[in-house]
Length: 300
Image 1 (cartoon, rainbow, N blue to C red):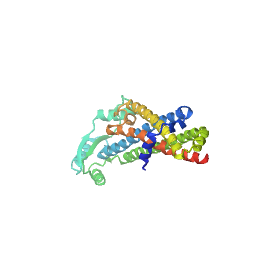
Image 2 (spheres, rainbow, N blue to C red):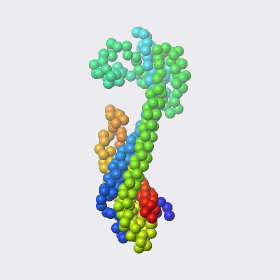
Image 3 (spheres, helix red, strand yellow):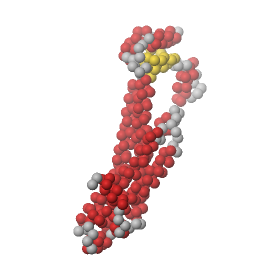
Image 4 (cartoon, rainbow, N blue to C red):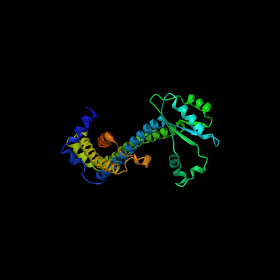
């Protein structure tokens, strides 16, 4: 029989066999609390993993499509070099748009570091030209050579040194999120195993009596598996619901907030947390089944 079939069979259970497992007590609330808390944390780990995956793709695509040309020239030559650089850029295959940033835009870029009253006109701030490439892209090395010849004060920054660390960091955060989910699953299995062992030990005398009247170990183990699987599913469902509500209350994505406002689920990704209770059921089923048969062998 498949694992899914075993879980469904365990969920149906047997009313008489269920009496072997105490319906209340520390094992009940321990299983419910552990599965609920772990499911709550798993929702956030999943949200982090999905959000960083989106950021890695977004940062990579956006920074790859844009570049900046910085013009640093002696007084009296800046305007001429800007015009020369723009002419080079506009005649370069692969460049879709060229735009000279205004003083207000450059002041806005510097404002987070120097404040709103920065006298940009009195400072030797280089002129910036925004370059947006088309789908085919351009040859950065060839463009650098042309800019050096036509506008010696022009420096092309294709954002490679900024893009790679950002994308690498986002990918590593996504990996850490997935690793956290695996650790949460392992911790859940460990706690449910401890709870099942405690319940089995507490009912050792009842188990011996059941064996004397002809009950098989499979019959006894099924009662524990069903009870703990249902407890885990109940706790995980509550924890998942609470986690989804908490994620929904996070601020929506915005440019000003950056990474911290983009941690929620988007679109069909909201369906992913619904898998968590099913995974909790599978973990509880496997952990309880293994613990039950191991303990039953020890009680022989």
